[in-house]
Amino acid sequence: MCGITGIYIVNNPSEVNKDTLIKMRDSLIHRGPDDSGLYISQDKKVGLGFRRLAIIDLSPLGNQPMTNEDQTLWLIFNGEIYNFQEIKEDLIKKGHQFKSKTDSEVLLHLYEEKGEKCLDDLNGMYAFVIWDEKNKKLFASRDRLGIKPFYYYYQDGIFLFGSEIKAILQNPVVKREPDLEGISHYLTFACTPAPFTLFKNIKKLPVAHYLTLDKFGHLETQRYWQPFSSVIARKPQADEAIYIQEVRSLLKDSIEKQMVSDVPFGCFLSGGIDSSTNAVLMSQAMGKPVETFSISYKDFPRYDEFEYSRKINQILKSTSHEAVVGPEEFLSWIKEMAQKTDDPNGDWVCFPVYYLAKLFRDNGVIMGQVGEGSDELFCGYGTYMAFINIWKKFWRWTIHWPK
Image (cartoon, rainbow, N blue to C red; front, side, top):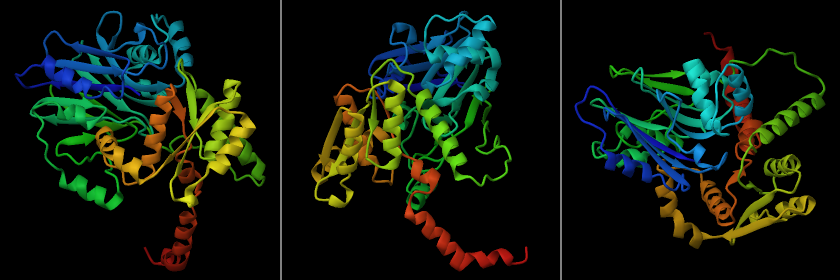
């Protein structure tokens, strides 16, 4: 992951302060330890900051902020575009020229070609900002599933943004005041749904949305994708094997697309169906066993899944890394984790995932895949069936009420 942050001042006499912008940028150093960059416009109304984690094209040509040939567009981008090679080939046919092998440069040229419609072509996880110097317009977007974060603040003609809230808080114009509605949502849902955060006047850009801010100070957010907008009506198939084959094909394609990288790959492995499938398909795509990382818990044998992860490692002949953690470990880095995340998370699984991420880095592995989310997609938890039974018992008869 990388870190992006910046400032756009409209209808306000103040200017971008370079020292403040550097503080905003470097508060995200944990997101991008490999390089840093800065851009301030000639009129000092726009400032962009970037911290880089080098994944594709590790050369300086991938550094950001990145600009086009005539320096009318400037880009800062966090994420990966999985289909950038196909997009690049199409853009080359249309006359675009490239200096690097990065997906970020492809995104910049795609915006140059199609403007806001560029989002229709993207397959990936991303949060990015493009500054249009010619039209004095800022364009920002967040991916369709909200994998990459994007926060912003807009008061009195000063627009601030960042990959994390802490970058915005580095600017002295921002008052650290609680947002009571955001806190209420957190206490209800154990998370803060967009556009809310726990801080007053700091918002979260919703998933599958883009944001524009023009030179007149008009800010607009717009949804650009609906999850079921492209679903094609189809007749149910009697043969279960058809669905199994289709899911397998989609999963294989997804995993392979997400493995475009110039740095080492690893896999979180619990031994369950989801992460085991990941490990097998990643190994097939790589042509060699993927490096795996697993975790267990002291004094909680119920959650010890090493038996299963070790079986998968045996089959794949993988290099495996294991960690056993308990209350002492959790308490020793809970403050560090809270400082890194900004937005609180009510799901305790964030603790082992965070620990495994550290284990990745300590072993020189930069990129990884996880099996998180599959239980939600395929109703893998027993509680889902329990809710259906409750509905059948207590609520199904209400559908016959007159409307």
